[in-house]
Image (cartoon, rainbow, N blue to C red; front, side, top):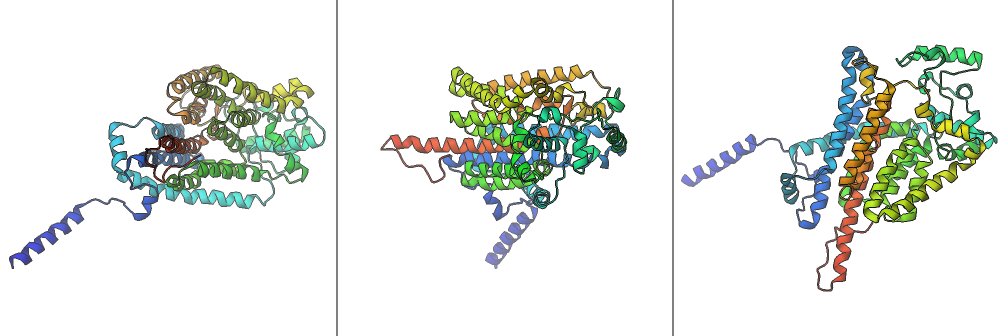
Length: 502
């Protein structure tokens, strides 16, 4: 009888203990994302798997910013701008948390393989985010086979520039937005309005109806000073579209879809097998980059080149070639040049840095040289258009506070000064941490644009996932180095199968 009562007491205590325990969110499938092996050789993998959660947070915050601001701005004005501002700053913090030095407590959790409940919850939320990423992916696949929809004027003008080149005309002199409007179904909100003509002496961005009215008037007069018509990017931006123009297929979306898929493939090849589930998950959950892909945003192609330049930094020619191609594509890649210089200087020396920058600059110059010789003034006017032309303030940075009239507008020079100060701060920070975290450039290079007169969200959407790619590549390179070192010592033990070569 006493035995029966003892057994019943133990059973009751076990039941009460189980009922009192909180939900742990521990599922067997999570072992593909959080390794259970806590050996010393697996600790870098375990650490990066847990750091990937911060990348998930950054992607989640950026995805929330993709919600149409018109949904909540009318109810919160003028405080509506605080929401995208907070989402963007939060994503910056999350990206920084992904690569910042681990505390002693975090190091102990890595050694023990401890995964917190909030990390598992974020993993589940990231899977939910893949639904929206999958929708954008599906949209992209469908739109590849549809007539072109130029949702941004950069893509439409680049496509038109490729057509002009085939006609033997200089795109930097003969480009005209009105020609694009007549040829394709260009909506007014797909253009870049200028503070000229009927839009002169104003700072508030034109409404859809205002732009349509002015555009209709310009079409009748065959003169459109209010809309940017210049090819505003270096020559490779439209030379990559020549093949589309040859076949008269002006839907250039396949190029940008292929660029993103190649970026994912590069991440897959660079990652250890234990990190590849995270690569696939984050690539599909990256709603913000998917929306940029759907929109035919040139930043996708440019970021592929930048990532390859960083990833292949130990291969002189390949690295400088990819950097040169990026420089010849879009001006946003120029922000990465000083960070690349710091990285090569610290890893390979000052002379090597000069050699690579000279090689990359020469390649970019050769690609643009025919158009420079053709008409240097027109080429320079096009390249400088993003900063020289009187564009309206726009973006999700601090200027958004003025756009919503929460604070007054500052002179445009003030934003430029703040941008320059932020760049100096970012470079000093990168100089200090480059040897340990060379991937930090993916965030620090675009951080100054947060203070710019035009801080478009697409500038920042290409930071989180590329940074994660470089993080997983660094882990694999480190593991490969550790695996090769013992081979020099006949008495050393063999490394586990976890290691590999890049």
